Length: 78
Image (tube, rainbow, N blue to C red; front, top):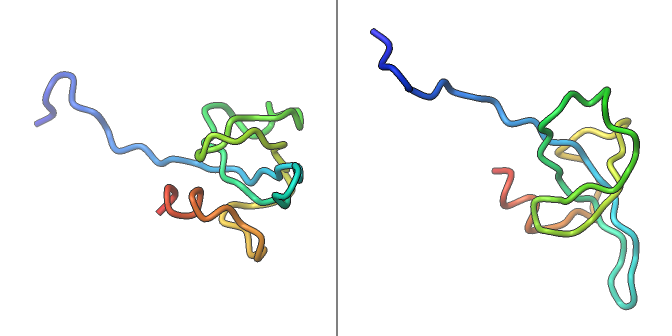
């Protein structure tokens, strides 16, 4: 029996995004939670899970195998 108003389990999809190096910080890979199909992403900057702005790279998957990954985004996606 399904309860009215019950929430169905939803899979959260993340995209990989690359930030720019600013000042003493280096460019990092971040996670962006997708709220629309990946085909609609146009390479613009999106807000990442950690709050940074980064350009979504549709050719990269999250989690990425790169070493320069944002530790906050890694924690928030697990």
